[in-house]
Image 1 (cartoon, rainbow, N blue to C red):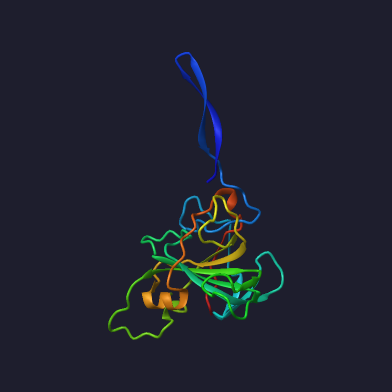
Image 2: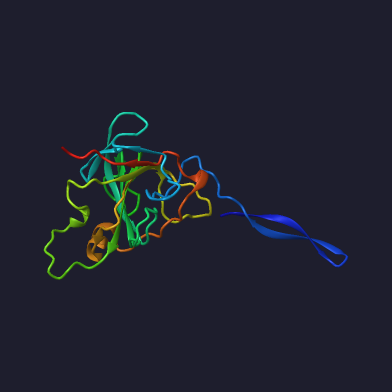
Length: 236
């Protein structure tokens, strides 16, 4: 948050002095809505602006997705260009017990073929950019566990479960380089689920040895007015 100087008159006996003090100033409003944000579906008042049964991600093949803009426009295939994690949750989904990490899968329409750092955004060359985010508690697997590598990507209780997603227009995240920074645009799909777990080995293998710092929650005029609670129709 930026500050500005304000002159305040202070009377000491018969002497009046103009004393500069530092007062808080509201963060800058960005032309691009910012992330992360409050996405708690149980919050009162609700942060959501609408509901839908249709996600902006029409198909998720992990290495690529089919993206359909909520505001209209043609479908587009986007390609995985980054995987990283934040060492504390960024978005607030209202879990009773706070998850340990938030993982991000980043997709772009054009991806650098080689010579880039996949744990950051060096590979992501052209938008639209889509971030798929999930939160996990980090815990070692049970000694008698017999699961395949990558099972953390199936954290939900069965294919028939009714999952929900928070989707919105926002920005990339990560630590700000200066107060009130405006980061580049990105579309978001957040999996609303509090009970997922991931083991430390898998976390570091897929998302990097070291997590990024979390960006502070954005609010007010810095967030979009299109936050949508998506509840897909049950398969028949």
